[in-house]
Image (cartoon, rainbow, N blue to C red; front, side, top):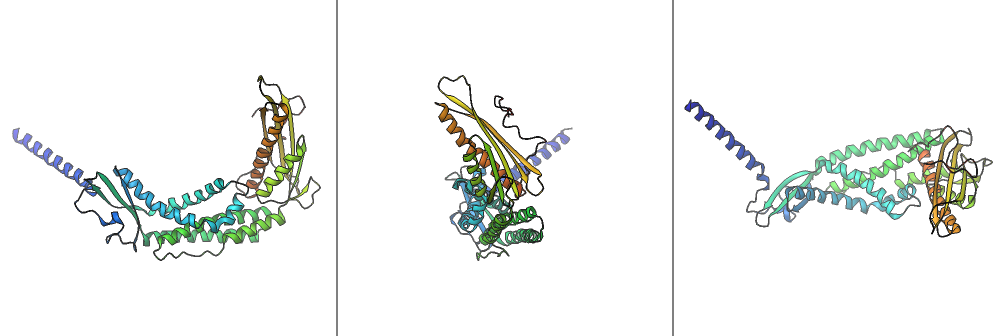
Length: 378
């Protein structure tokens, strides 16, 4: 019995020793060797710059050092894409007319994020080191240039096929919406393709990219010209404060790239007709300091040729100020912004095939049927 127990203890001891050795080896990569790796200071014979694109991370913990190493590689690509942004300005103008520089930057950031995320799929931790004296962790993240280049070329080839198909289908389409939607998709894919091509130039040690068959400026110019010539919009707004609201709507449509070619259903050259109603009236609110005005707007969008209603948009709200006149002026400003912006975006999204307009079985219900009846709640 003692012999069996001794054997069992011996076997358990060996297993524990093996586990300890494995545990120690698992941390060998973060060992604090006496020699500081050359890659920490920007050079390495093991990972030469001709074959690897690398980034170094340094932190008080292993996870942070690893994260910073990945971030260092990511910054290389983001910097290059930002430098190329001027080449895409024509697309950004079409995509975000009337928006602020911050909003345009968000569009560029989205393109950057999509491409950088794909690039980082090829990045891995190549080496690590722990400085025992300074208690600092170091990580080297990087990608093999040849492998990343091969993956990027495949991605560019896929986008080139999509862009060519979309441009061809746009030029062959008899339907005007199909023409516009294919051109818009081609322009979007081309911007994405240019971002990937910028990444390819970064990956390649010679800095050379892979030219596209089309240019962003050419496709966006073609799209603008087609919209102006073939998809005119007529606008007809009635009711209180109709004139400033109609003016704001026309400006909003222009910012989205559309031409307003007439007023009301008599505009023969228009493809779409937007008919809107606006109302505004004072309301009683238990507030001794402020006076309040409620407002509502309804709009119906229809195809002129078929008289088919393709969408409806309703908005409503209330505004307050120290006097009823000032409350009304504030309500007009809010209506101009919300009504024109939302409606213009909705029309653009429908025409570009990005989102269908909502169509109810009855007329919009933002405004009351009768003068004394409050609008339906939203």
